[in-house]
Amino acid sequence: MKIEIIKCLQDNYSYLIINEKTKSACVVDPSEAEPIIDYVEKNNINLKFILNTHHHFDHVGGNKNLKKKYNSKVVGFAGDKERIPEIDIILKDKEIWKEEKFEAKIFHIPGHTSGHICFNFFTEKLLFTGDTLFSLGCGRIFEGTYEQMFNSLNLIKTFPKETKIFCGHEYTLKNSEFCLMYDKDNKKLKQKIIYNKKRIEEGFPTIPTTLQDELDMNIFLRSDRKDIQSNLNLINSNPLETFSKLRDLKDNF
Image 1 (tube, one colour):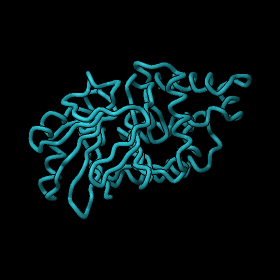
Image 2 (spheres, rainbow, N blue to C red):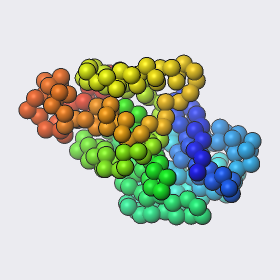
Image 3 (spheres, rainbow, N blue to C red):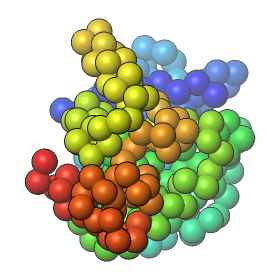
Image 4 (cartoon, one colour):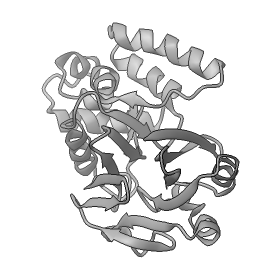
């Protein structure tokens, strides 16, 4: 499978998952239709499916026009079926969706929204996390609880470490600045910041990241570390309390 990263709106990413043999494709979280149509038309792609991680407009804004133009099927979570525009295929938690050569397992990962899911293309080890896990960050908590988001991230931590992570926004540089404030001695993080700044300067995305990199550098996946708890003056806190404090601090960063 080929993954084509499509920039949308101000800082959103949509992803075309393309079967290079058949030219059929899925699109993940089309913020708007036009950039997707432009790529599909120029490359003679058959857009068969639209996959939505959650209902926010900047992830479903292109559903209606793409479905109308290509007769694509919209795939989403049962718990969000009333809020996913044009939904056709309704999936449950831990259900495996398989159509043509595409196969992904669905995981319910609430926190950012109550009905948020990720699509785990487990054979290729590709994970589309929407606004739950970002490169060096995690999503704001709008409809869920701190504990739900914490548990959702802990679930993602159990996937194979070489899994490639494709998230919903280009927030990496800002996220890395926050991580460095409370993880000052992380040499790998400092090196990654230099690399990512160069990527942005050259006009390239910082995505995908890998789960291993996130485990090593993303402070929201490292709230069990005593050095980070100490930097937050939370020496006797548990990981959930540390995570909650980090999320509050990031909201005002």
